[in-house]
Length: 460
Image 1 (tube, rainbow, N blue to C red):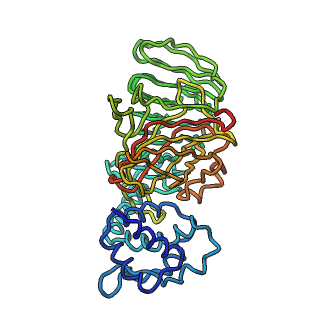
Image 2 (cartoon, rainbow, N blue to C red):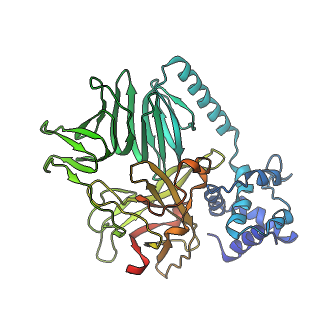
Image 3 (cartoon, rainbow, N blue to C red):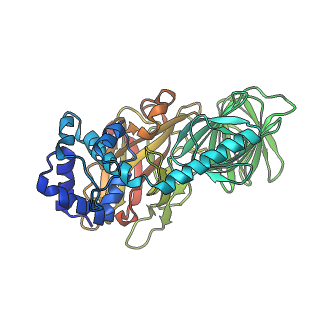
């Protein structure tokens, strides 16, 4: 466990005030304290374009003559005093993590996967390409090879796309300009042999479909329904026992598999296909700006380990391990939990300029780094980005319980997708909240979420 003295030592290094006598203790801390190294790895996922500065400050091999982690000179960061503490923290962290995580094993693995993608693209007929990407996304190609070495512009030949974390998302563009966006912990199999066929195994997908021929409409299969699409914009969510469809433009024909009934869903309407529900399109309800989680009622639409209510404790959601990508393209494990906010059954939740997000939870380690964020989308269904913050003023009590209120306008676009900022929302304000999520770098943090509430400051 990190002590207050350890934290102060890191702060002096971050601020550029590290004394010469502090260098060796800091090297020892980074070498021997797994929690400190994990904290730095997690913070390295936030990138403000400072990697070049950090790389120049690091030594060539990242260690000194005695095998200890090398550090830039204490005054290397002092020239950056004009930067806010938030940015200077990331600069110092990037310096250590870039060196610590660059291993020959990863380079070999990434090189192998790139070769596989190149061979696959040449030997098979491509049907589309990736036009947007965030978080860890896995692709299983026709040959059965699973890879996460994907980037914007990668051409695909069909297969299965799967998000590996609550913050994952990928946008695919077919040759005719039709696009599908998969978000969060979703899994989509796609093909196009003269007719586009999608199988949404779980999760949700937003689509903007170019006109298709009546003889070969796009088909979308879920566990409980089949959709026929000739050209429209829609969002579909697949659960174990139900399919929710929202149409924003055009018309979609839905067939319920349990009884074969079909229904045409026009623009601005929605329908839920479940075995015991009425298969009748309804007007998409007006959006709301207030929402509260219901963990005490059900674990539905959550990512994490749900723990039911007991005599002494509220129901809660514990973080579980997920893969994450650092700005340098490295894979690492973080511990995350998430809750779906806007779904196919209820009104969409919108963030307003004065919106607040109240989070109640529990931490086993008071000084743990905690990230909080939301995934948002446009009203037409297009992905809007992940917006986040970290380490707000958490003050756990003696039993580790905490309550924090986040301002929606303070959430920043995930720096991992800064290169795509022209295609994403500039702010989460006036956007639909798809999900709320949180994460920590280590399981030792013991992060659990008890309740999440979205409200406007004037209404609370």
